[in-house]
Image (cartoon, rainbow, N blue to C red):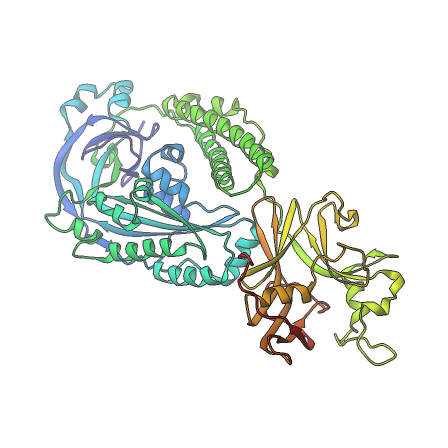
Length: 597
């Protein structure tokens, strides 16, 4: 039976082939491995032209990166993603999840191919097994290495990890890290000034060919160089990652001492084997009677096995990423670890089945049919949505009002303030003193922990978002907690945020100011979300009495904006003017005791 067809049969990556090969080496396409020495010999020649790209101008897809690293979509090498190899570590660090966004670049240099071009005949080994189909299969496989391509590749990746899907979506709506590395750096520089500080950046690199020891210099520290990656946070210490990106761009393009110089003529160690291109023996007129082992059922079983592997591998990477988040809490960490153990066990079963599918090809279908994987509780590998907030009314008779009813009471359909009979805008007192009316900031979320009350960079207070001894039970419920911002109730401890008191506290640090009062809500997953409360601008001037001072205050809010919750984290929006006021103050404090927010 004739096996194969004329022309090239496959590209085999030298990175994951398992053993080095030379022209003429035998390749078993059923097992996807090199099985011995050369069963053919001939005269070699070079063909084609060299190609190179050193600019890091265009990012790759993850699928393309896996192919270039040798982890093909349906091949045996795919299962090598679970190993501790440098390529596998790089791919894990460069993989996107629902909580991570990745971009990958490659500098590439390939030399003209060495080709077994003419006078291709059986070698002495080939002649010794010719005519015996089983021996030919074991010794020579179905194909031989027709071409050998040498070169070098430099891979570089940036992965941004987020504490929620919403964070990732917010980032993607404003910033783009695909395209060139330089544009990605510019976007990350901007994001580090504007975006949440709980986003983490992971930068990885992998070099094949050339002098790989020189790659370590881009990481800056011996520890990061040894690991092959560096981590930082947006805003807090992004300068460390920015330095790595800058040095990577220089390294990829420096023809004198960087990556391109390492594959110049005469460079040592120079290019490495990158690709083995195989061809069926029939391409050179060698026909051997080899019975096929990989029938349609076994091919389909392999495809199913790869599908199982990809799903479990993605869950494993996700669990690793979630496990690194700070302040997850013991209960959540234990839940993640339990599911990670299930995933690891499933992967062990899949890898054992893969060994059978490629080493005992005829047993693949039965093995995969008998494969039993444990169910993974994917909810344990999901983080709840970020907390959200809105301003509401809370009254004695009705309790917590809906957002729409709260807005309707204060403003009309056009958004203008509803007026009292005296012609002034409504306020809480108009609800009646007996009502005990309050304006509250309702925070909705899972596992709420606390809220820091801040003005710009200073913390002026803190409010628990969980039940506390002696606290008010109505403020905390399943999936929510609220902070009282204004109230006609005079019960001690009821009002959580007194904006005038907070202003006087902040004035001890900021004698003149223009900024926002806001709350930083923290949950038990280590995430913080900002909600604006009020804009304030003030100037401290001399008072009417010597040794005293006056605070001239202007404030604005958008508590009752229609179409919003009134607590959006951005500074824009249709803000309602709040007016101005002046307050006499005592002498300025001798020192500022406000902690950072």
